[in-house]
Image (spheres, rainbow, N blue to C red):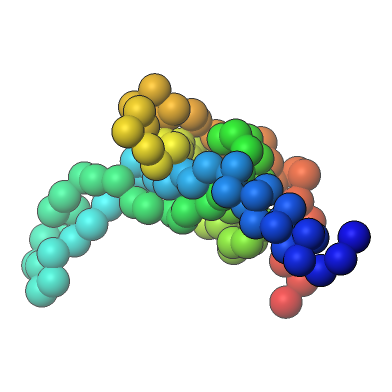
Length: 107
């Protein structure tokens, strides 16, 4: 296969991938210069963005590109496909279930 046909095929495969945003409800946000030990806002934390053919594939890509996530205290992460029907695409994942499948960072 010549380079142009390979590139066209590669571009086509990338175009078929869907983009997902991954979030967690775990964690809190404090306002700058706050004096309270209580969090100011309970909100969502963006853990990342990834491409995939489906939510599971995108989650694996997210972990491969951001291995540090497995070393955080976050457990439940959910995603939305970034399109007009994002609410129907919501999926949940648990890092605790994935930690056994990924080797620990050796740095």
